[in-house]
Length: 67
Length: 461
Image 1: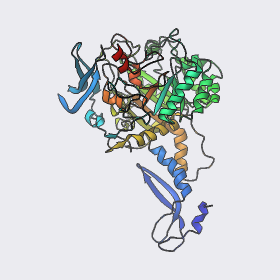
Image 2: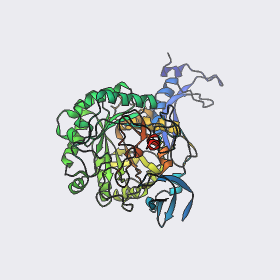
Image 3: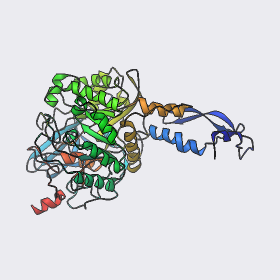
């Protein structure tokens, strides 16, 4: 099962280097969030774990999209 | 002065004849104007242009993709508003279903859209109420439900009704109440919470005794304060609902808001309802005393010294733009900060899909108006902190402009997402259900239990 520790073993499919957990800025509807997610140190692409996307990110998105 | 695209339809407030109508700017106020061939001209102010408030035409012009009911209960026969419902021409499915479980209320306030009183009518049986919940769930899915009346807490079996609503898996189960029993009966709030209630939609017009006597017939502020406290202790969310009447309590909306944000975090929001001339109302069906939405925006900004600002307010995401405004804030130490500027659902957005925005709106209401959620045990990052803040510190400020027989706009009616469930299982937009003519006749409320769409009744008459 995938966990947050998988950042240690994830590899960037483009650069073939190991992803590192780095602070990443998320901006949505004028709100800024700083969250650590696995990132390629070479190209900067991030990997968003499914659990994060379907969990807290989805919760925040719904809360922001108030009427 | 006429405006572009200002045409709609309305009803004669005397005979309910369908009339062409148009919005017309007269001085600083936009009026809805119409002429009945039998009863003459009528006009009513709907949007007073106060400096700094939104432009009427821009606010009204929010374009939408209609989201008609998936299972219409009636066919189109005479056309809106005579075929409820809902009929296939309705443009918005249900966000909030209202189930009236009694027409009785011992308070019999001078202002009451339902014209409730201690000896009025009977109570529907539990089996009838179950059928009403079932009809709502079948037609509208997991919408939010408000148990209303009359005064629902005057029914001893209210906890059973709440449990029944829970069985249908509605998003939010709320009771619309004057709060008197919640305030005076120890343990009652906890009893309703145990039954599955999420939230009290609590009538709360003022903190001043004189205004309370004018609107409610007696000074019952102490009981209402006790109700707010009791709900907090029981873990119920509270939405304070203020009926607004010019010359009575429009001078204290700022005081009421500033008081509300200092109460416990279980007080989830404050909702204003400028009084409309239907049911029982104090000043006759005159047109000039009405408080329009931009006036209220201005009153709120000025009376709070700018704690809330006109620019915070945005048009609704599901009902018609002319029906309401709202804003969400984060509260801290008795102050409010706008949760964000603009909105994905605001009037500036080019095209709104009613199905999607109503889903979002329904879910937001269910989360925000229920009792506050507990903080997570650990907060690891900004997402966690935001979610925790929302659960405890968010506060909604909103207002809804009801339509009476003078101000009725068929375009607004068709966009309504607040529907009353009749005892025969039909859904009728809230304002149509409560609409009364100048001499007090109802358009829908007085239909007998074996009701038919109004168009069929007219045909048979």
